[in-house]
Length: 320
Ligand SMILES: Nc1ncnc2c1ncn2[C@@H]1O[C@H](COP(=O)(O)OP(=O)(O)OP(=O)(O)O)[C@@H](O)[C@H]1O
Image (cartoon, rainbow, N blue to C red; front, side):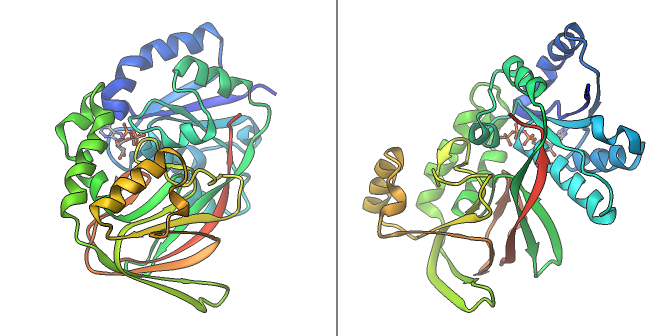
């Protein structure tokens, strides 16, 4: 059955790269006679509203033919997923419309994890060659202090990586098409020196009967995919096909440990180091004492003491 694609386009993604490429992409879609339409996002969070509006306006008989294509970076895909989840939470009996992804962002960690090409033409061909949707695991978080719930495709970080995202998002070069990739690295070096560790407690097990405490939480990351921060292979074994989330916690390391960590990271042996804590769980709660930044799929949260329950969830994706 031929598909109807709705591209939800964030022209600001990839340091404005989407704005430059979109006319070319449309030409190519027309050349291939693809049945599509496009809607542009205008501000942060617009992708959620647009997705909900599309789903609300659907004719039932069209549901089977439709694919939503998040076009931009991981933040755009994050918004489309959250829009879908919010809509289906309110309409649980409605059939899910699958989400696809045309990655033209700065970090592109989700595309890297799913081996979606970073060449838009090849990525489009990949989308057009898909035969049926796939159910993938996504992360679900419930912020118990703020009573809000959301979903993530990549990761939820507290502490070091979140502070790096905060600094990188506010750095001038993030919005430069060529230098944007380096914004994370430059921010990381500065923050490693100055970051104040935070007491972190994890509760897990069916009745939260297991407790682990880390007095000097430094890097606290929950990930659904191998990568974070624009290509850092933090949990090489993480997979969107496995019904679990990976937690990595490192307590404030010495400079020697940082160097050992980086060397082992390159060799993908870092999770075996004694000062690196790694475990996989389906349902757990992380509590931190002390205000720190968080990041969810590369978008920063406000500074806060976190009390977050994490679970796995699923969604249908139109990916190869
Ligand atoms: N028209 C717009 N102008 C400015 N920002 C927008 C617009 N539309 C969406 N946004 C916001 O842009 C932010 C960044 O988008 P996105 O993450 O997709 O791109 P990126 O940061 O370049 O990629 P990545 O997350 O892969 O590094 C998101 O928070 C999104 O809400």
